Image 1 (cartoon, rainbow, N blue to C red):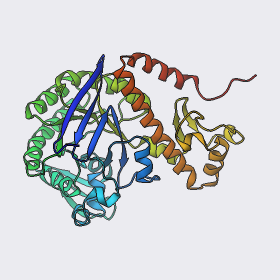
Image 2: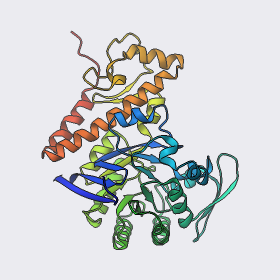
Image 3: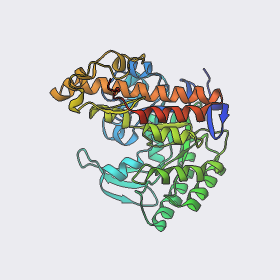
Image 4: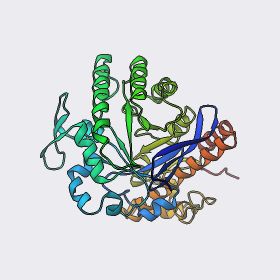
Amino acid sequence: MTDAFSFALHAKDGAARTGEISTPRGNIRTPAFMPVGTAATVKGVYPEQVRATGADILLGNTYHLMLRPGAERIARLGGLHHFMRWERPILTDSGGFQVMSLSALRKLSEDGVTFRSHIDGAVHELTPERAVEIQGLLGSDIQMQLDECVRLPCEDAEAERAMRLSLRWAERSKRAFEAQPKGRALFGIVQGGAVESLRIESARALADMDFPGYSIGGLAVGEPQDVMLRMIETVEPHLPSTKPRYLMGVGTPDDLLEAVARGIDMFDCVMPTRSGRHALAFTRFGKINLKNARHAEDPRPLDEESDCPALRDYSRAYLHHLIRCGEMLGPMLLTWANLHYYQDLMAGMRAAIAEGRFEEFRAQTKAGWAAGDIPERG
């Protein structure tokens, strides 16, 4: 345990890295996947279950929490960690992406963004300073600058305008963050759409500002995977090797594997929880859709070798039955299973990098997904 924020790199295998982020609330093993607790809860699972899957850190959402129940209320109630019974590290995003994707009548200016809540239509203003203030009230350990995220594809001029505005907001966010307690960290966010020169300019400018960590934003917003990976390859050489790198809002198991191969340390995504609520399981055999009729009389669990009860102890026939009947236990079990699989994948990558066999692990993992889960017929 430490009273400061720091990052130690333990091993590299190619561009893939493994290390550890130290915070006053505990250490985070990297590469790390952060389950998303949008509204102060990882949907469908208890905090104790999330921790048992191997998660070292959760993500909370500034936009949703500022609207309901409100950052000031959470602060009065002891902060986000106490409020949701998660005493380990929490990362909060700035709310910029949700303003873009969820709010009505959004009005952008140099000062910030004014928008109407998607919940009740109330008008709110989010500036770089207010975004940092909200995250400070929540008490999150890792916080994000306010940025403007544009959908891809977009015109180069639009990507450039948003990138330069985000850089100006990064400077303001950093100044506002200076008043926060020791041990917390603010990350800058690289923007620039799918334009390599803009991404490089953004990364270099943020590196000059000397943030404790760096995020790559504005990806997984409509572009193909190859574009996302090319942008990571473009940005990575321009980010300090001694600071953590966080790819925001990503992704599928294959996205995680490929991004780690390109030097990314941290991820978050709603995919494991959202997919679990829609009957889709992620396993070492690939994706399994429990809605499919072929599971109706299948006595096998999702993975008999797993140490997760949701993967090991419940038959596919039973999970199929729960989904077909609309029973809440079905999505709960599949969410638990997916979160566990994602953490298993991250643990496997960490071990493989430390042992210098990442490429072997990568190939074996992909082969397992390709082989599927249907047993051979005798």
